[in-house]
Image (tube, rainbow, N blue to C red; front, side, top):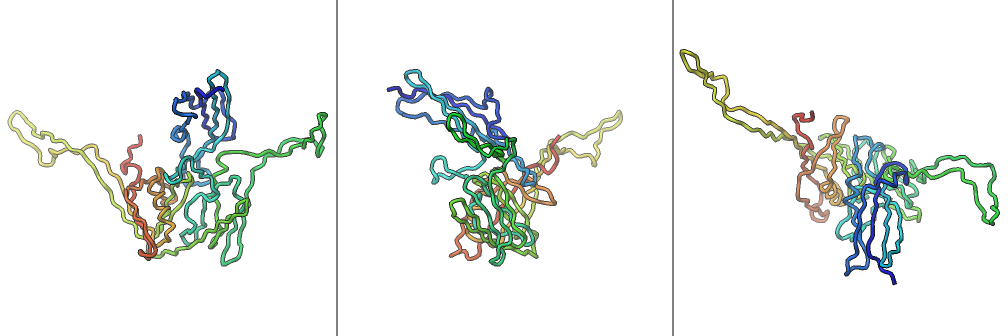
Length: 361
């Protein structure tokens, strides 16, 4: 019996419509030979794919670019020189799993965030990241027990030309139906944002198997401090928002280098130096701003949210109608327990991800 001896993997990573790539130009071609102690050949593609998945976010959620299609072709070669080919398609994101999730955790769940309790700024529409794949059916928004809005999800359809017959029997005895629409499969359509009506305090997400996920919304009308919204890519590879309602503190860290010069001047009759000229010269001045934000009092769901925020490699703060990249710099997360901590407040330090002195040339 022929046994597997080697395999060649071809990977294509691309934007746009599924299947529209150049088959002669894969991003990667990898060949592996089976080890004598193994029965299969494993390809780890996660880090390879991430190199080609864009991260583009300027504050416009609908225009954010965070995903890409991954098409693959595996050619298996056996000991008798026969071959077999496997093909497939995946949706690539910047998501990740935990060690406890074991190998290949599935992140395409309908709700693309870990918390079901949401704290939000009063007067702002709540945004919830969802995966509009095969599980998601609809979202209903409630206010005081009354449904105030409902959104139903399905495949985007494109109209195509078709003849007028409703159906016809082919001469080989197969009954076929004329198509009038085809599905529009774009990778950006899977990662979506849904917005609540103003004042909605609950959402119920219904899946196609009638499973329901309930979200509760608590609005904060902060009158003492200015709330700030921070957006980050969470473990699902989606954009998630968190509001910081507490005190904000800022500081700047300035770095500089110096060198010493001789300021003595000589003429034919005298030697002197000017007291207004420095002997210590400054150069290579750089400064970086940082800030400390406090969430205010939240529920214990935010333990996981804060952890994902601190683990994220892409974080932005919304200020003055723009978004600016920031980097969480704390290295320790203290998990809080409502039984002992009573009121849960999280403090996070950020560095702005750029020099305050413009070094972009």
